[in-house]
Image (cartoon, rainbow, N blue to C red; front, top):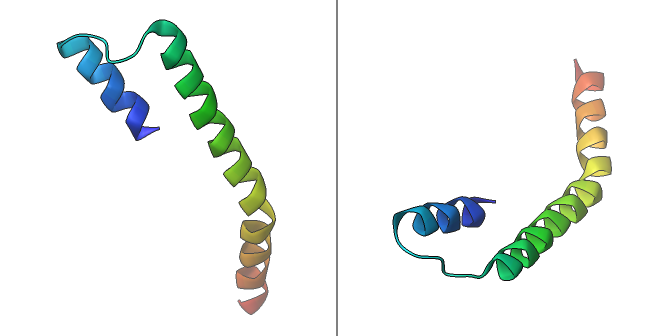
Length: 56
């Protein structure tokens, strides 16, 4: 996500590094990876939270 913010900042300050189509593809890939990681870690975080709650 930080990559997209830096890319947009550079685009506003200078000139576009990527075309609109390329930027949309990069955003889709970043969003997809973020969603996959969040989905993959959801169970682990829930289990970790439940374990911490049981300890108290």
